[in-house]
Image 1 (tube, rainbow, N blue to C red):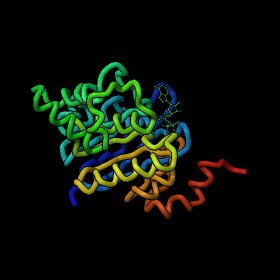
Image 2 (cartoon, helix red, strand yellow):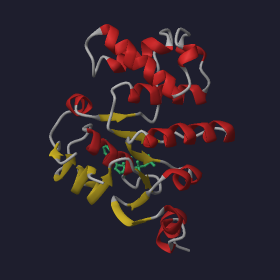
Image 3 (spheres, rainbow, N blue to C red):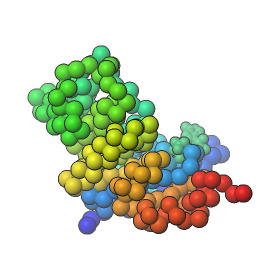
Length: 238
Ligand SMILES: Nc1ncnc2c1ncn2[C@@H]1O[C@H](COP(=O)(O)OP(=O)(O)OP(=O)(O)O)[C@@H](O)[C@H]1O
């Protein structure tokens, strides 16, 4: 399978803090990369560098072989990058369709076509039947699904999911894992930052573990979670 997303030697500094230190990754098309690590490890910063929300001081990023390191987020969206945000903030007075339409317009300026994209996205996350309801009444699980629909509405080829599973109850977690798995069946490539190990194990083809800005290990989910370095990174030394 060809590489969908590749990053070589990404470094991001905030003043004296090296938030991401020389991180490289390569995700094949249709695969899921899980990105884990304790709080402050640098996952969100790496995520922001890959999606264009921060500019790395060093390194290069390629989408389907084309360099995108310096492209702003809106241009990355147009060439196939979609993302969710950790704190989902729907427009509460707008309907679900209108919320997703706001995202769809980033990709498609014509209203009819954008509406089609938005409805397709709502269907993929099981919210199509509520399209004309305001976002105000949604519970957490449905807000997350709406957030996922917004990311899907730009028809990404690589989708970034930022802590989509946090706080979901067991049935909602199962549903969300199911929605994400279905997306890769359609050949979407996914990078997910996630603290919920059940989701990481169920979904990831490959896992990268970060601590203090660096990759400390990577591999199959079952292997990395048993790695003593990972256990130490999460729990600390005695
Ligand atoms: N805008 C910023 N300015 C200064 N320092 C920052 C900024 N963003 C992140 N950092 C620092 O960079 C480091 C990595 O933070 P980051 O949020 O990427 O970690 P994380 O792994 O995503 O953590 P969490 O799991 O808590 O979301 C931390 O030391 C953080 O304080």
